[in-house]
Length: 192
Image 1 (spheres, helix red, strand yellow):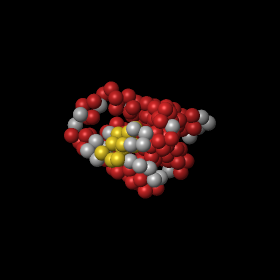
Image 2 (image 1 turned 180 degrees about the vertical axis):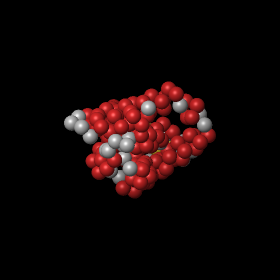
Image 3 (image 1 turned 90 degrees about the vertical axis):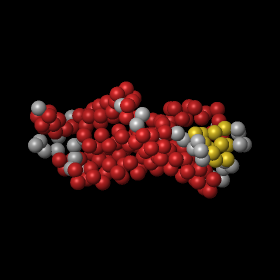
Image 4 (image 1 turned 30 degrees about the horizontal axis):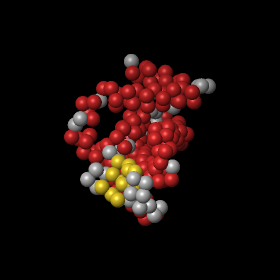
């Protein structure tokens, strides 16, 4: 049954509307795994494993963002390492990098996107970790840009956080997926 569906998908993906089929599959995978994260996997998000990984990622993003803000952008920041908080004394503002800012959810979505999407396994084995690395760097960039917005336009911080930087994650995931489809996935478009 699954093999038959997969063969039908490969046939559609190699046809006239293959690009639309691929975009639809991309969208379905991202949306389904977003839904699963928030509605089904609550037990997973309560585990020590999740808390350890998400906490570690958040701490790494916090330290890297702090370093860039101080050394490259010359910002005045009082760090609170206990809570991963960047305190901006000149404007009486702060940014806390917690588990929900860790990028773990996006890495989870990338994992399942590329595991389930067509393409050779030999490339999936390196492309998935490389995509995680890119998302980690994007997350650092996100916190740095939010710091710039907070210092220069504090009244715009909520807008940039919710409507610019959060969707930016998915733009980057989409770009990674396009690279995958254009350069790696096409080699296995033949039905099994």
